[in-house]
Length: 355
Image 1 (cartoon, helix red, strand yellow):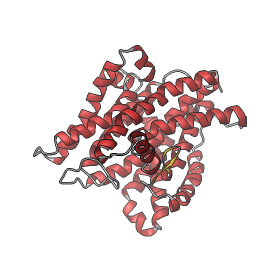
Image 2 (image 1 turned 180 degrees about the horizontal axis):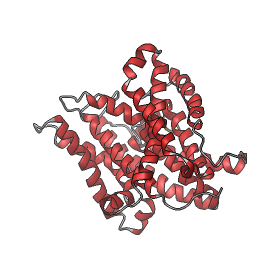
Image 3 (image 1 turned 135 degrees about the horizontal axis):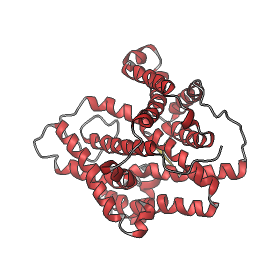
């Protein structure tokens, strides 16, 4: 089956949803138990955000990579490889260079109060303190790497495997039989929130999920499985994932933690990915108004939101407001201020090629 080129409205809706959820995820970091570090800490802490963070982390970026892989498949197969790589570099590489050298590098240099040579500081930051040099743009760096790896795979490996055009209900189970034990094995050495620099910053604990979903996105395009994915199958997996999520405390008691965490996370990931695809396909096939504007600027919102969110969190940190309200303010500010910035920058012709 030929690769799909055109935009698919319900996938654009999903990107809008995911973009807003990413902003909310980062907005909540100041007000909940992050499991890591954050520049701003404000309280009292919201207990429910811990579950919110786990829920998001289980599927959010994986679905992003799936959608990216879906559309990468067409470009990689139908464009000259030099044009493909040039477009990838412009859209992904230029923002990485800009933010690393001119935004995150200077910010960390200032926060560290460093007197070292700036470029030595940047090198140390990148290789010894991931992902601080790129912050949330680790996703962009990973997407660039996956895009190059995928091009190498299709150009040199020449793998030709015939797949059924009909999406079978047991395919997700087959994938879970792969993903769960691989996660358990990997996380024995690389637990969640442990980052390394393998040229780019990588959270190895989620690498099997992210890269495999990117490849599955490409496979869905090749086979046309989005057209044969039955809602009842999607919602069955979604229901199972949600049941396991809400039962996770019981599961953690009954299974070794490494296995229970991977089982819950992996089923929730697949359930949410399939469920959201079918839900948005059924309910959202026309885009207009503010949703269309956000869709057109989703990448810009992703690039800029972190700075806006942190600035907002800092500005309201000394104001006596309910923490829930601060969480909402930081989320909405991150979305709409970043949206306005993206709209303005996209009026510049060159910036439209990036954003």
